[in-house]
Image 1 (cartoon, rainbow, N blue to C red):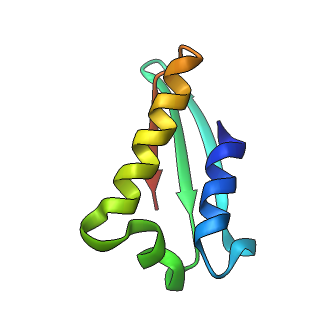
Image 2: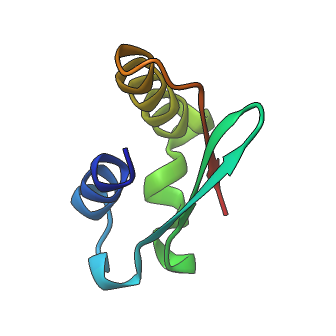
Length: 75
């Protein structure tokens, strides 16, 4: 899951070296924290949050296929 989110984020931003993904396990499921350069934050969030919403939807559906409950936080 971490690799998929990393790939998606690096494809969207101008500064792919600044992308980092941290993975945390909790009793409620897995949390992925996505960090990007401040200049690329708009590219990840998109207009009215549409890109961020689609990233979360895509990641949740990929995790659901593996039986994992997943949350994506953009920091």
